[in-house]
Image (tube, rainbow, N blue to C red; front, top):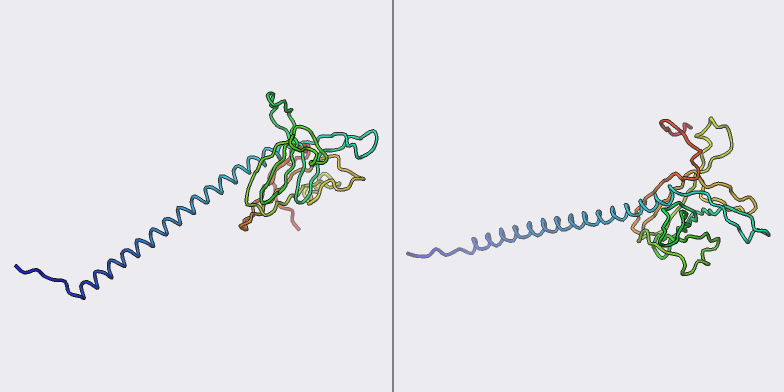
Length: 225
């Protein structure tokens, strides 16, 4: 019985087929790996967005007007609103569950800003006009990382006919910037737009608790030009 030997042509064809199969499997494996990494990345982003959403919802939806003596405004110091809204940072008073163990009350004072690529919230149980005075007494929470900048917008209600509700709603990037004519109320709503370092843009819009007397019932429709 004689053995049949493979010819050179058969060996070349077998090697080519094997190479083609391996290349196909390698490409398929890379696609599966990329898809899995993309899923994991999207899950991580979604988790980060949900965490940020809960934090912003807690702070903005529970924002209330709070008045406190301002020693820089005269003698005796008048009570002024503890709220400062700027385009890139926000100071507000927000309701929280009273923590008996820590001695914190039902109102928390928060400063939101971006520091070194992080959206940071500074917390304290006392109001501070100058947050630099807080020192180590306050608490800091990193709400998001990889942030390029944050932009705040504030919903205002201009004077006018109450029936013309849509035309009276205005948006501004600054709130309470005139020391001679300070505002006596907080915004109707606050919009937070986060611009990430990778180019993504996310926005959150929340009504504040301290402006509940401004309500509109029924289906809302955009104002016609």
